[in-house]
Length: 145
Ligand code: DQA
Image (cartoon, rainbow, N blue to C red):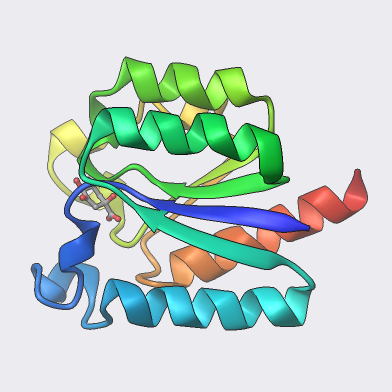
């Protein structure tokens, strides 16, 4: 089983960016933990990050060819991007939306996700563990099929 973990804009700054909201782990540290968790779950993890909407769309399209599912933190594009939502729909493999912070407990503009309705599910508010929980759920879902 192969899983893409895809991080959106500004997540390259994790560890330094508003650590009181997003935690103190860097993106590399999170990716290392997810790769280790993947090993115990029997899944090969490939991690990618981009600050660019088009590059995220390209990564989703490419995943269609090689991945069984995607754990996706679309960052700020969660709340704005119809194009990313369309890409999630287009690839036809399960995508789990994850957020480090509890987006519903924050500013109103973060309450709406354009991505959630086309995802298999969503995990938010557990810091880096949102990714771990999302990965576990996705692997579980794929094992059932
Ligand atoms: C985020 C939440 C978004 O609202 C924000 O724009 C981010 C990070 C999160 O992981 O909590 O960049 O996706």
